[in-house]
Image (tube, rainbow, N blue to C red):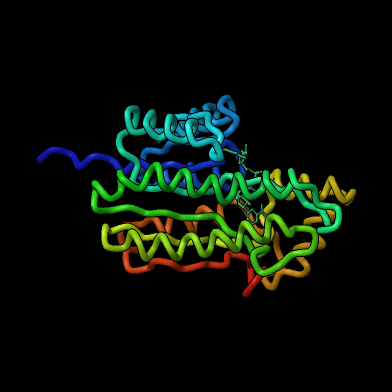
Length: 253
Ligand code: NAD
């Protein structure tokens, strides 16, 4: 009997942080992975690391908020790895500021990457899932969706992703596709390191302070999120759809 073709996953914003950990984990789970990122060189480096661990991965440069870049990237992934049937919308940025100081550009940039980006990527990939009569979509929300000082743009985008996910679950369920959201709490990554720098608190101090407020008394690690993604992507998780899983060391981080 011929070998079944491998499942192909696209992870956006996968050059580093949560995305890179997720790409590594899905490769360990046996999927072939497209490491998509704005930063093509870093994406290729992450893909190379996966390959040295025995996985199959390609690095792809694309801005998820650019329609043509997204269409081109998905076509390239389908050509080089096979049609993608797993999509992890992870690419993200922050442009924090109190509302009265928030610039139009800060609002638009955050909406562009998180919301428009997830929309464009999902629209470009979904037909491969529909053709295969199977698919998995995982969107990265955040505990900030519940409201967070200085993040009117980011919390709005992350709450929006929850609504987006639930609608995907309803529209695509009959094609064997599930869509779920992961809402991380505080995770040690370059993104949170930049926040510590911006507010002028040494990183170790910042982590310690944040950990104190988390019921399990530690900062989240990128692999904590990769673990949750792996669960949603698993073929045995097909009856779980439209859900938001807070991975925050407590009810809400
Ligand atoms: P990170 O900043 O370390 O990595 C984000 C990656 O996304 C980078 O490699 C960056 O180049 C890429 N990216 C940014 N804009 C892009 C674009 N337009 N197109 C393609 N790629 C782009 O962030 P992280 O901490 O790993 O966060 C990953 C996701 O998890 C984000 O959506 C973030 O909002 C979410 N999240 C993070 C935390 C946390 O505490 N770190 C908490 C909740 C949610």
